[in-house]
Image (cartoon, rainbow, N blue to C red; front, side, top):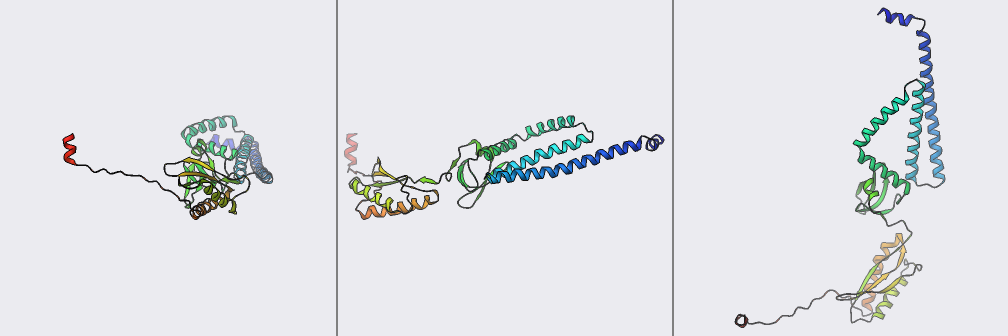
Length: 282
């Protein structure tokens, strides 16, 4: 106890206290000023990307990364001012990070896939896609998962690793789409008449594009019908309208022109037999 009191009453205590107080104040000043600078830099980076019309998802993601990295640098600088062994501390944090990384390798895989999705942007918010066996509109690309909304208004959450590892089909990436349909007519029908009817239906539809031009040709000779491939082009947002209208109008116009829409038929031949005669023959 006496040695403890002697330390506080010694001539070395006050200078040491002043020294530690000055280091603490300086460290706090570095942290406060550094945090303010980090906020300013983050906002500048965000505004710069917005001016360059970068995707909003990418803006948020990169801004958060920049803020986290700069804030870590500020904290390290403040700890170094206090005289703490920053190098040793970083080694400990690195070892702990490695252990946590091994334990959370699946989550880190999702994070890495999220970075790749944001960087390469195979889709953006609002796109209708088919990923990981699920179709829907993109709501959000988060750090670990991608959120979709299906046409029947169900929300689907898919891990980013599954999204990036599989095939991604983006139905709305292009402003035009080809509508592929098949019309079957009877073998007894006049193919020239059928072609003229289908051409007239596509030409008269207001949402069928003139360029690229539509194609109509005999695609196959089926068991019960001669099949025409009808391939008009439409704006992406008009795809389903063109699909439904051309199918309905095509059927009606073909029937009006005397063409029949065949359906699969099977002929069954029945032969009368005498059981007694068959038994004697056997």
